[in-house]
Amino acid sequence: MAIVIPELNVAPCEECGMSPVNHRLERTSLALDFVFSRLFRPFSFLISWAVPLTDRAMNLGGPLFLNSMAKAGLAMRVNELDPNSSETTLALWREAEQRGIAIYEIRPFGLRRSLFITRHGGRPWVFQGLPRLTHWQRSLMWIDDKAEMKRRFRKAGFPVANGGLCRTWGQAQKLFRSLEAPVIVKPNEGSGGRHTTVHIDTEEKLKAAFENARLVSPFVIVEEELRGPVFRATLVHRKLAGVLRRDPPQVTGDGRLSIRELVERENVNPLRRGPVFADINLDSKISRAELERQQLTPQSVPAKGRVVYFHFKVNWGVGGTSRDATPEVHPDTIQLFEDIGEYLDDDIVGVDFMIEDISRSWRDQERCGVIELNSLPHLGNHHFPFEGPVRNVAGAIWDMIYPASAS
View 1 (cartoon, rainbow, N blue to C red):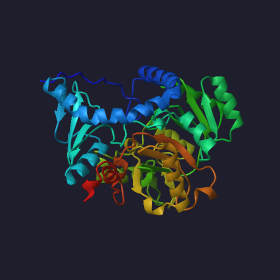
View 2 (cartoon, rainbow, N blue to C red):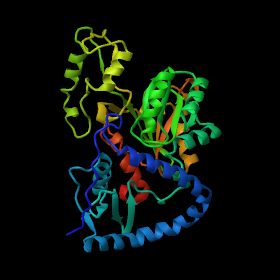
View 3 (tube, rainbow, N blue to C red):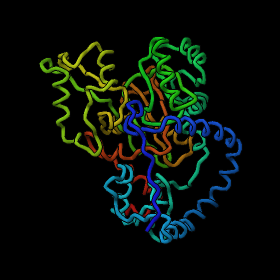
View 4 (cartoon, rainbow, N blue to C red):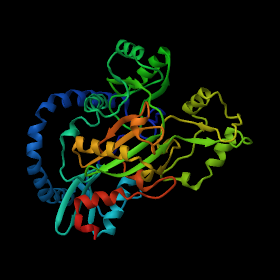
């Protein structure tokens, strides 16, 4: 019997969304990450020099070591998809099975750590999260650090929002006065829009937003709010594999039904029954605030064609939706994404990009740009869209790792 360590239970938090964290532990962890990432960054060239040797040792010796742990009861070997597996795991696993790639998961001490072993054509591969040709690239030292990303991208000529990093309220206040409202405030690291506040146009709102972000991060980003929907561009081996448009929870008025009635009708959609997309929660604190910002109430009857929003986040867990937008992307913007991939020199990266019209060149639009990068992008975004075709990003990844499996 394997030794199992119970997972840490975390209290629900509306600001954290579907992935709540222990605020104190998260803040401490991010503070340590901030310090150590800057201490070790100058030595990244030494790490990159050792990576080929590490990769070879990992792929040759990793399966033996991890399977030995399982035999000794120190880990669990999972040979089939788990009903609670993430959408990313589902996409990778199903595509692997279709290609004849053997795959299983190892859970040290029973804990889910997205640790997998695969084999095809006699070649083993060990990876955590997503399979890469090399287990480490230099950009991984800073890719999830929003402030560092903005500094590097601005220098490289990639579009990003005006703004910067703050540690104190005084710094945030000074920066806010130099920017064009509205602004957005968010933790310097983290994902899923956790403890992020948008549409800030007064110092009173800024103060509340700053304190909210500081609950989970000692360092806070204050920047101008970009315009348009959020698009997730996923790059595999420095080439664009897919672009997904991600929209916040919303309904469109018909001139007859109230907002509450429109939401009730939308929530009947069977796609919102899980496991991916959630209902729109009209009665949450953030939904009420969004309606108030739009000068609406649940009883309002929006005009025909008017779009009503209930959250600034595009996450599925708050009722957001998605659709594939790859064919719509303007060639200039495709080139921008692939230039970013070359600059990062990373095998897999997710680029969150805001722009009003993805079919027009980014060069012709104001207040568009990269809002953040993700070193472990969720493939489920592309494989489980709310509407439209599936974009097989998992296939592009396996093409990179096991080229022969495509045939």
